[in-house]
Length: 327
Image 1 (cartoon, rainbow, N blue to C red):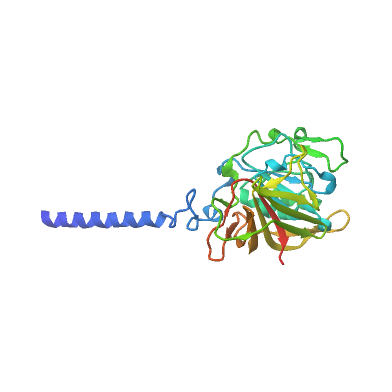
Image 2 (image 1 turned 90 degrees about the horizontal axis):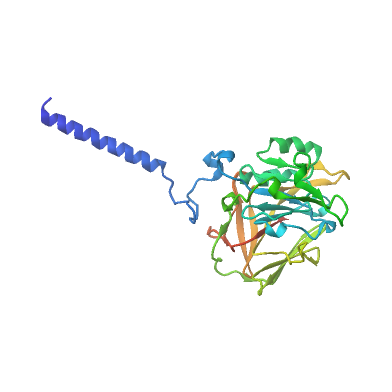
């Protein structure tokens, strides 16, 4: 082979190699962005990323909160970044408080876990779950779930009984004894977006969500620029006398069905399905938006979009999500 032929062959080989590398790099890129502040519609879901929860950094602290009338006023719930309200036995309600950006000195009263909590918690990787007891048949499922369970049985020094109210409505948690510091904003893997309000919306002074034996009312306060919370017809306050409030409220319509578990009175424990899709109402800035929600996998957060698929931003601050039965 002559020198000119060898040069032409080498040039052709180099060109083919460059094209192959370029194609490989393009195949490895994710279209549509997905970085911080992006709309994320082109980014892979957490369930597709194969990220080990233990390698994903600090996880959220989640505390199950008693919400019977005898358990109020609450302590430390107003410091939670997100509060979920769910229906339990007898048509009553219970709260799940999620802490990431700050930890109060005390949280409570603490109560028991439910089966549907395990599905809801999957979005947080391997969170720390503080609770007091569960139905015996549920305990093996909790043991197998990807979470760190902290109860009065294995973290006795983190819990104490308060005075002035009867058991079981007087159990409190000192969170710093199980989580030394707040894990930070990155632990809020809820899928929620924060930013400017969507266009339009309906002016709304208040909104009430009813369970068979409980109800939540959210009333807009212009002076405080947030929704004031009421429970069972009474203003909800903290143990310090401050009115409980949230910058964003989500009424999320879900399927609530019977589970395989019952309480000691024989009442069936409702199971709240949080994976799937449906309708929701987002309340912020004194207005309401009817939106769609989607959560494809338990390891994913929940996305909220308008009818044309535009992601819905929440107001910066605390979020309350109230799970309501599908109308």
